[in-house]
Length: 492
Image (cartoon, rainbow, N blue to C red):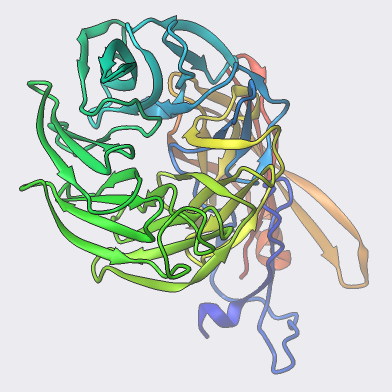
């Protein structure tokens, strides 16, 4: 008899961990029903997807509005009320996602957001009016770009586009702001190679991309794109290619980062002409999967998201329909979900990258503009029983717990096990019997196996009736966390 013969289950996928998935144990018959015979192997299955160590909330800025909304990446539901931060153009999170950095073109500098408190904890003046921000690959510093010095440009004057680097740990500026090429500022963030040596900046006014040596802070090369309005840039996971979205030319450009030369222009099906007003639509933001295999890009005028296979440079699959005027994009660190800000719909689309279907589309305040993945607020932290297949060995039930909490926060509490006994004669009158509890204390973002002793009677009951329920009561950072219930099934 195979494991497939042993287990038949109904999958109630709601995204809410408080609604467990349930397995009914027995042999599947030809009609699909389960017989009363139990399987021979004794096992426990906890049926909740493994939680990533980082990437539990999407922070959504609003165009010309002070709200920042938060979306839980597990449920794709809005968390609480929006944070009143002020108009924000750019957002990024430091390592671990506990601290956010927001830009709004204000000379006062960067607003630092504490995800636990949901408040701006301080401002970092940089000597420029920052419009966009990029975290350095080593996670130790960040680069903000925006309007710097006011300089004459022909008969007029314009603010020189500059970048400013600051230390994430201390908030102190590193050196002075430096020129990043061009004469007009931009709201598009720098794209930095994985080695932290070179940054790329798009200049839509000149239709160029500027390569910058971050060590010397000098311009390496100004690269003509041969396209109209280059916008967002991302770097391949191996650092060899820079992908450039050309806003109004219906194509993507590949730049070799070793030579800083364009190597390929990839046409994207559009309306047959040039210009952002063409019905084919512009190309806005890009999002590259962590393994570097698929590049997602949005089409604002079409309300779709499309995919590029980076190995073949070919478009794959059909366009994914999202909301009106999709703009900002962000992908979770595990690569399972792409989030898209639909500016004119007031929604955020969650695309499952395994099925390339929209699995959620919550409504947020204002006009969603930019997105970034950060840590959830502490109030939503809970113990999660991760996906596992752990047998009962030597009379102990092995349950895997995961402390889903921001860095420097621990989880403590007790794990309680109970068995639900369903008598065939009275199936609607189940009896519950507690099997005991075990205390635990876990570090943040840590996984641990809890071993709960089962006495002889409990083992007999589990083997006979097959329904074992686990409940983890969590206390997080001094406050009560959420309770999570998982149905564990065993058989004999």
